[in-house]
Length: 415
Image 1: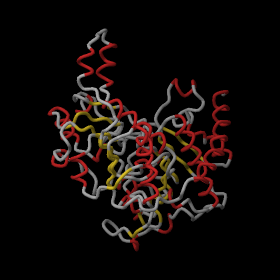
Image 2: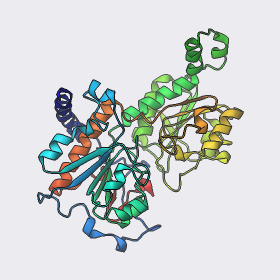
Image 3: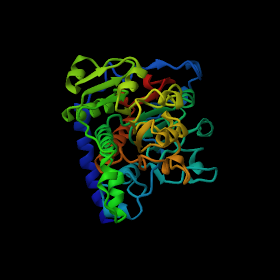
Image 4: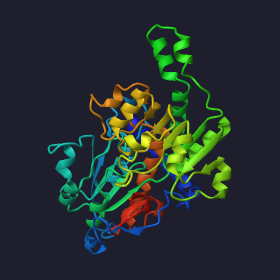
């Protein structure tokens, strides 16, 4: 009970922190692939099929009691050890006391897969679904078709590709996320992974753990970041934050590829130059980081053919989405030396199978999906979820930057 009370106190403080952050964060990134200019979705559905009866503003502010289902990962013993650890089942984003005091039903589970899972028991009558990219509950078209009461799908974090967005739009479901809540967390993690690969850190660490001492074996593949060409594919909020953190390392050149320029001011701040030819960028970069959203256009974009365009021995960092790359092609590129190494925390299916090829391929520095769920990020996205739920209950609009699908329309970066 003491841990729960502490979590509530910390959460209230986090709400204040989130409000400050939101006030200082631009609602839109002009000139970026992350900009949220809403366009009519025409490929999979048309606006006339939009189910207006399920649009999120109906019934809001009327005192209605909602059934809210959250899908989070289990915190186990760590949940009690750290009351700031809000992003787990046990601490439930710090929302339980508040939601239940308003008369809402709040069910939180980690059981999300298969026809007999806990989530399936609530699909038919839940009003709101809260999911997370770190333990994604895949909201398929089949599930959406069964979720007749579902009005709002909230992502606690950033990245809503685990939801079938065209189907959600067609069904009149609003999809929103806490944009910007973990950009610092992910950008810092990407910089760490770059250094881990370039300095050949993991093989050196493994030597010590195994009781060995072989400086030559570790040093023969260890380099400086200085004087290297580093690029990001995608220069939205995370991409730009990574570039800013790379600037003090005196890299030979910082490059970005994006459908739009980030503008002269951002280019001065980051020290980066736009390269409009993706293959030209890959051919001259020593390190490439992926910072683009997953869409049908970008799924497996980095296949065997595109990986062959990389500079021989380049390092690839992917904290965006695992399905941006062909997993077998990445494994083969690491084995052949076409890639000097691969690191990321995102997998095509989460959790990955025990025999997933990335677990055992050479020159990798893979981890579970954790870059955006640091304790600090959890405080921010938990506060953001509460703020948006409060707006939903009052019938108030969400910040435009947080909305992914609304009124049958999908945000530009997911098209």
